[in-house]
Each structure stands twice: as C-alpha cells, then as structure tokens.
Length: 369
Image (cartoon, rainbow, N blue to C red; front, top):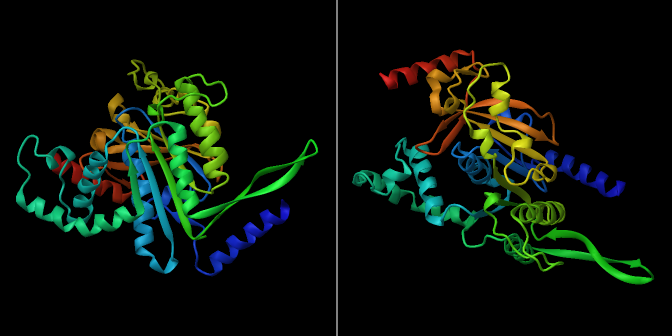
C-alpha cells in the first residue's frame, strides 16, 4: 500500500515537471482555487444552496464550462475530457438554452435571458438569431465533450450508464483472494485507456432521484435510502474511489433554511447561510463528499452588508461561496461572487474594500440611474 501511494506521489511530481496536469484548475476563480485547486480525479464534490439561488448555474460554471474552456485553451496538455451530466430537473433543451444565453453574453456581450430566447414576451431580434447561428460550431464541438442525460432518474440506472462508459474506455481488473478456504474474486483497480482523461459525473439535483427497490430486501427504498444508495454505494465506493472519476452532486438546503428570520443579531447570517446540517432530505451525503461548496444570496433576506460587501448596491447580483468541507485544505472560507441571473454567469469579485470594487459599485449605480 505504501509503495502504491509513493508511486502515485512521485508520478504526480513528474507530471508537473513534464508540464502535464494533475488537476484541471478553476482558472477564472483564483480565490477559490487557493483552497480548492480545481477538478481532481477521484474527488467527490457537493454543491448546495437554497432553492433559486443559482446552484445549478454555479455547477455548470465550475464543472462544465471551466474544464471545457481549459481543455480547449491548452491543447498542448493533450487532455481528454468527458462530462456526463445527469439532469434530473432540466430537459436537454433547457440545459442548452442556458448555455446559449451564457455564450451570447461572454462572446458577444449580448444579454438575452432564457425567456427572451423563446420569444415568450416579444420576438427575438433577427440580429440575435444570427449570432446564435454563429454559435453552432462552438456547441458542435462542446457536445463532443459534454453529454446531457435527462431520461435516467434512478441510482442504479445512472450507475449502469457510468459503468458502461468506463467499460468502453478502460479495463476493470480483479484479483483472487482466499476466503474460508475458497478462492474469491474481488475488485482490484480500474485502468483507463487514456491516463490523461478526466471524467466528471454530475447529478443535478439528488433530491429528485427516483426511488427504487433494494437489491437485497426487494422492498422500495425511501428517498433518504435512495440518496444514500447513490452517494455512498455508487459515487463514493465505485465511481470516485475505483474509477477515479470526479463526482459532483447538487443538493438543496432544507426549506427551513429559506425562511425569513425576523430578528437581529450577529448570528443571523450563520443561521441563514447554507450549512452541512441544512442539507435537504439526507444529511449523510456530507460524509461521502470530500469538498462541499455552499452558495448564499443575502439580498433575499434584506441583509445590507455581507463579508464587507455592500448588498444594498449589489442586490441580487451578489453571491457568496463558502467552503463548508474541504479534505484538500481549509474549510469555512468565503469569497464574494457576482452573479448575472439573466445570462447565468458568475465571476469572482475583487476584495470588498478595493478600488476595483468601487468601480463596480459606480457602474451599478450608473446603470440604475
């Protein structure tokens, strides 16, 4: 066991010397990357927030767009990327609409919401439709890396899909040991065909997992048991531990966290912010995850200052991301984010008391007037 671990450490160091990557960094989130370096093989991440705060959008930004853009910008790294996105809430079309809105914003500086794209209130301008046509090549390439599955809801069905991908792109090795005097085959390791491949398995969100029968008792499992089956048996013990695939689960905070608290005091923010004990439907998932990220929107609670940021100016554009659990480094760290809900985009804010932040405040105030 020591020799295998040492060889892994030495291989990582040699990869660094060769200019190869041991993880895909969060290139556009420098503050977060100081504590969570990015996408690591075999790591289990959990993203949590109250309903409507933007956890799905943050998940897409960090674990879909960030790795895709990194791989495209660094062809010299010779990385292979596959993202299996199990959309339990969105349809494929809804998923794509959000990405198109984001692409128009980042590439053409055109802000068009998902509602606007569908011409619900007014016709989408022809010039915008022409810009969307120009995005065809981008998304044609994007879909080579990202697969959205919106028709599988139960844990075993999702696991079988991931397992089938692993069978096509690698080899599962077994070894024999003696148990009770009889030779028994047990799992040994997974060997990918391409050691430079990063596979990211995303489930959004886990409270929508479809309940299924327990394979031992043949009885229907509860929602709590179903979530545990997916998280502990499949995500932790198989997909991340054995396959070395990156797992990202999205989980809501319980409804009690979303209620307005009508009192004052220094503890009000801690009572409202996402927490490990606030996970909805099954709090045990925090034990399986190695990194837990919580997203918070203080404007909905009429909080005027948060982490020294002026929420009266930023309003619903402000989000804070908090590292609730971190096996890679320090937990309980926060950083401020700017969230554009119209175009589903995030970026890190400068330090709260910096001149760069003053410029952002000025722009927001001018936009309002």
